Length: 159
Image 1 (cartoon, rainbow, N blue to C red):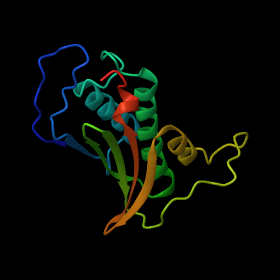
Image 2: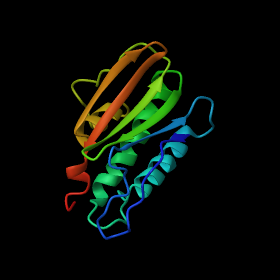
Image 3: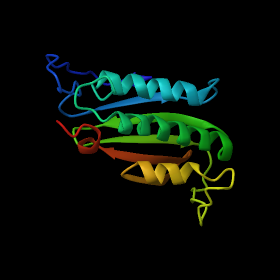
Image 4: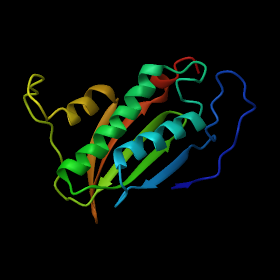
């Protein structure tokens, strides 16, 4: 895990502890046991550090739960369909949180259409699409990164 230096606020209710220029946190997942659980815990810890957790004043608990769910879905999809996740990146700015999960498979994902809620499987990208504000995939030299973004205005509407 790597993080950039952070600036802490004075602890006022509703104040974010996110540095003014944002922060990017990385967690290597390649070869780790229980990568979904570890990614969920890493994400929950980052949200808490940034005062974007359910315990923080003015934060929408449903959105924080959606963020952790999207992380779990992206990591699980990399495990099921792409040979395992390589890395989780959380890139927070004053306006949005971007989640990226990279894997070593070059094939880009596509949601199963039509979505069939009564059938098992095929719900991961549908969940990502429905809960995040934006999502997509980008190829890179080692494979691809699947990303999802949440607007801070939705996460912490009182700020």
